Length: 277
Ligand SMILES: Cc1cc2nc3c(=O)[nH]c(=O)nc-3n(C[C@H](O)[C@H](O)[C@H](O)COP(=O)(O)OP(=O)(O)OC[C@H]3O[C@@H](n4cnc5c(N)ncnc54)[C@H](O)[C@@H]3O)c2cc1C
Image (cartoon, rainbow, N blue to C red; front, side):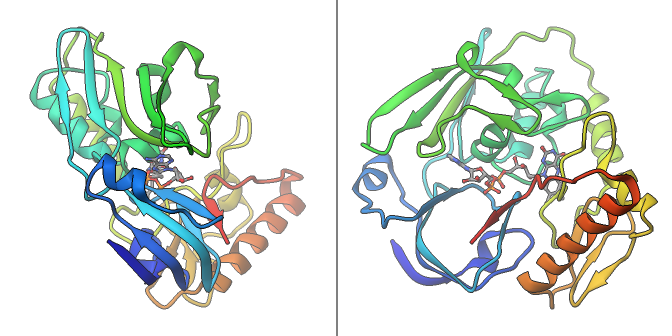
């Protein structure tokens, strides 16, 4: 179903932006293949690492949330479709006494978005477990990218930006199962992050050997606010929308923080969040 003039705030967790020309949620690969894309297109997962900074996105946004959701495993591999949430796969693996993925619990995105971003937490990152990723290219052809051909680093990878991630096979190789790990990581997350507010996770990447949150705090920016967007007091690398924020408030705060940190520490902060015009 094609939805025209769809509100962008409904498809990103920070809830900003105007509308998009079309929002499409295919229910099958066949429907996905039939989409006639406008020149501009964007694939989204749960919108938890993106921020729309426009009144009108003049293109097609596609979400796979209505396609069937699949998770399965055997002794060697774990398969899941890209539209499964990180929390759901972590819970499934926990219930099957499979370890190594507990850190994904509580990341409010989909596996597709997590692979694209090389999401990680507690010193682990998702692309390190990949056996192969299933993708669909812009000609509608399915292909696989093997884990060993992935070139990745902190929140970065060589996954083709014009392909859509359909699913993934992870290695199932960690043998020791710690049944307390998932809840202890979940508690750590809840204690240190504003999990139930409108945000898009960490705004800035950590510069080498530094924490962006500490730099922001050191520059005395905790709680700093522009309009309806402010810096979380719980975690200084999070911008929170109090519900009345606009993307202009967001951009003003972003610019202010970057300038302040540069002047105090001579360090240029780089965005982790993907800004979409
Ligand atoms: C409260 C909170 C806590 C967070 N904690 C963490 C954390 O601990 N660690 C961490 O790494 N991140 C964290 N994040 C950020 C975010 O949740 C992750 O980056 C997540 O993996 C993004 O997934 P998503 O489905 O929301 O992707 P989206 O935000 O929808 O998209 C992100 C990027 O991936 C692309 N993409 C999404 N799906 C597909 C697909 N199927 N095919 C091709 N491209 C696709 C999009 O085009 C976009 O460029 C947090 C965010 C919030 C709000």
